[in-house]
Image 1 (cartoon, rainbow, N blue to C red):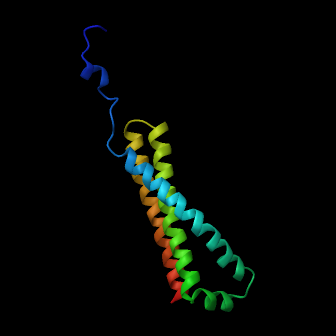
Image 2 (image 1 turned 90 degrees about the horizontal axis):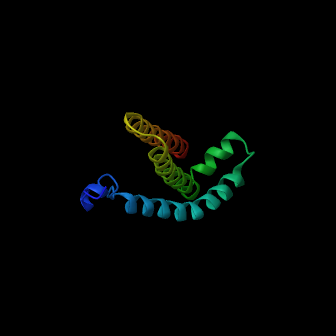
Image 3 (image 1 turned 135 degrees about the vertical axis):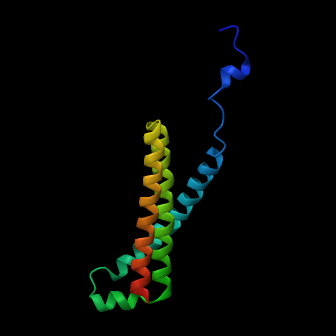
Length: 123
């Protein structure tokens, strides 16, 4: 052990260069969701139990549609970041790369479908 240089001891233990950015993205999306989730609950709860025509008319107004779209976008992005952290912590090797790619595709696809549904209702 005495013959190891400082560089050799630190190999593989250094920064991955994206931890701070990832942490800030999680913090920003968390704060955004603190505002968006109550807005979504109140706008969605207001129309819950109404007839189909009333729901369509309600979501054709800009505020409820924008709140729902923003909640879906930020929520799925936050989900992607959280699951990526989970995979990075507990999965190793090729499986890690495959799961991260699959999770990113699934979360963006879910966000796209949610936004498509809201836009379809709103227009």
